[in-house]
Image (cartoon, rainbow, N blue to C red):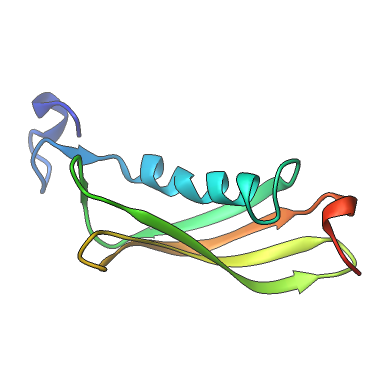
Length: 104
């Protein structure tokens, strides 16, 4: 809620970052690092645990949970933490790696 009018009646005040904006960090990590450019981001689930405020420092982490060799799908656990090391978003994601990104 970047604007007071958006925050009116909400349990938090203006200055919080929309949760899906923070959750989009996971697709950026997957696309740029793991498995990397050209991977298809197939799905994502998010659970919002705490608000993220405009001046918070947030770290997005993805951890490989499982790899399906046949489909080249990579399953991840995802977590965003704030500078106090508190979980702000947790979830799961799935990508399909390019054939050249995948070792059988």
